[in-house]
Every structure is written in C-alpha cells, then in structure tokens.
Length: 257
Image: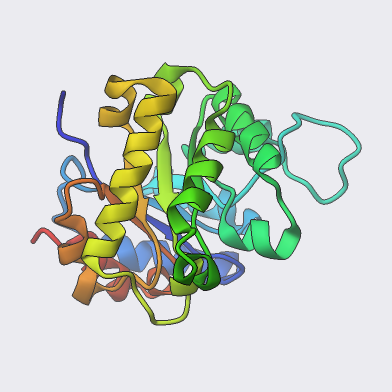
C-alpha cells in the first residue's frame, strides 16, 4: 500500500467575495512557490459565488491547488431553489466537495441520510467527497463520542462501493473545537481517527481502510499542525479560520518543511 498523501483543505465558509478570493489564492500561490504538492496536497474551498473566479486563477496561472466546494445538493437538477447541483460544480473543475460539515448538520438540519445521498451524488459527478463527522462537547464528556462518530460513518457510507470509500476523504471535526481555539490533543485526535479507520474496515474491508484519507479539523494552526499530522491515522487537515489568511494557511501546509 502506497503512503497516503496528506490533504490540507481550506474551508473559507461564508467569507471573502470573489475579489478577496482572487487576492487570497494569488498570495497563497506566492507563499507556496517551492512547495512539493506530491508530498502534501492542497485544496481551497471558496463560497459558491467565488468558484469561477478562483478556477480561472488556478488554471490561467497554473497553480497546483485543487479547487473544492463547501457543499452541494444531492439532486442533479430540478425545482430546488437556492441549491447547487454537483454537475454544476463538476463543470467548474471542482475536485473535492465537503459534505456533512457540522455547521450544515447543526445549523441547517442535515441528516445522516442527506449526507449519504450527497456522498453518492458527488461520486456520480466524478468528484471526491470530503465527508465530515464529529461530536459535541456534551457527547464527548458523556462518553458517547465514538458511538456518535461511528454512527455517522456507517450511515454516510451506506451503499457506497468499497472502491469509492477507498478513494474518498473523511474529516473528523470535533464540534467543540471548531472556531473555539480549543483543539483536541494529538492523542485525542489520533484515537478518534484510528477508530474511524476501524469502522471503515468493518464497512468496506481492510484495503479501503488503509487507503482512505482521514483529516482532522478543529482550530488547526501552524503551531500545532506538525504534531497533529505526525499521528499515524491523520492524513491532513480541514482548516477553517486559519485558511483565510495566506501566510497562516501556508504555515500549516508547509508543516513538513
């Protein structure tokens, strides 16, 4: 089994208009001038209204980032006002789509079934899902964290072929650590990411479990990235606030330097 290439993904959430987004990717590209993308892959996930601008910049300037989206709907077309089809994203050369982010689940009421349908829709459109999972502080303190996350994994992967599971990305994001400044310790993060890989093995077999990339998300910064990434079952990071500033994000991406 080849080594899993870490994936560092910047989730910009509802920040940056298309002009700000253009400036950010240009600055990031400058900061990463000598970066080896074969060792650490990078994806950027702007708001929907920025995607075309960022796509054009990446392609015209031959930047080596992958373009990502923050969400999509699970239908290809129809009377779904305000939603975005995965086919539309694929036409913009989007490679990765975040599905099931805790903010989508907690604020907008997305269910495990919704997430499962989105995983399948993203694959059908020939893109790669980054499927999120994670527990609240209450669930962690009550001892229910692993059961909560295992349930999300099993539901999200239901009916997904083993080969697709092997090719996807799973992001573990403890809800209590998102945007709070609190970070799971490297040991805590490794324990849960290892448990996620074990659930994947139960669902899809050992080969898929060995191949799937598992990111950690939750107040990742340049100062803690290397220690988190050194854990055997952590294969990258889903970065929120720190991805909004080019030199901060570059500091995370170059944790191996």
